[in-house]
Image (cartoon, rainbow, N blue to C red; front, side):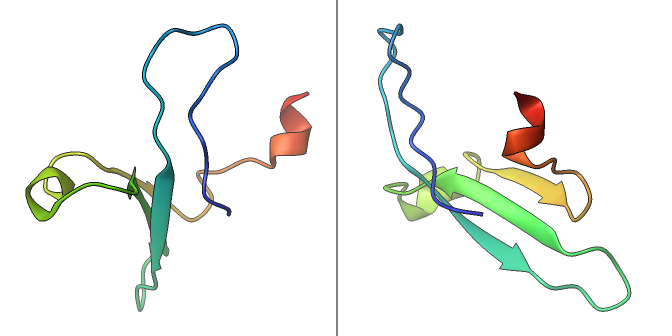
Length: 63
C-alpha cells in the first residue's frame, strides 16, 4: 500500500494526504489503519479507518 492523495480533478472539496500503519496481530488478521498525514494527536483518536487483511482488492482489478 502507498500513501494516497485524496484529490479529485472534478471536485472542489479540500484535499489531504493519507498515511497508514500495518498492525501485525498474532492469531488474528493483520490490520491497516489509514489516517490523515497531518493529523494531530487529538484528531488521530477519531480520524482514521481500520481494515483487516483480506478486506482490500487490487486497484487494477477495479478498472
